[in-house]
Length: 143
Image (tube, rainbow, N blue to C red; front, top):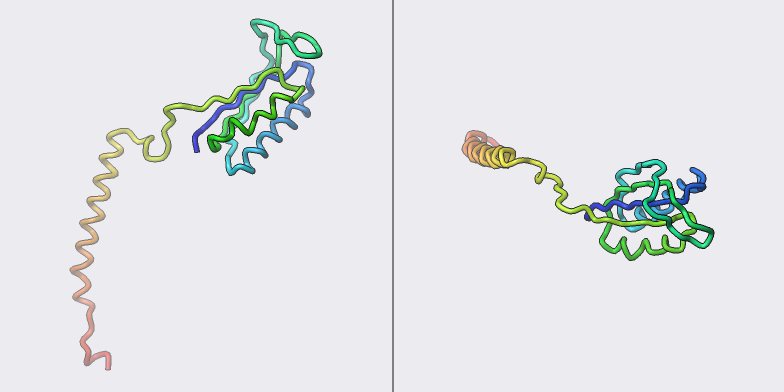
């Protein structure tokens, strides 16, 4: 699953309870689709470069939140219900590019170390095969 960042720009007069309600609802939606929310940040109140016009007026500032998640690529289509949310001024889903996971974190030196480890374990397996002959019992001793 690729990592995504979802940015929410809320109206400035919305209470913290209403903000957390919407963020929790999006988080539950991600979990139901076998995704994982990895981080939630509040970036505070931001002043906008231009006014965002909504039915109840024009807004020049808003509360900015960031939710990082790992989800299926269909999450972009599934979050379009946020367009009808009256607490939001804008929302944006961004797929993180060039993100490395697991063994990709290791540098080239780390990969060499891992390949050496696999060669050493193969050598150990060969030694164990030679020791098996010492422990075989004669047929007479078992009867």
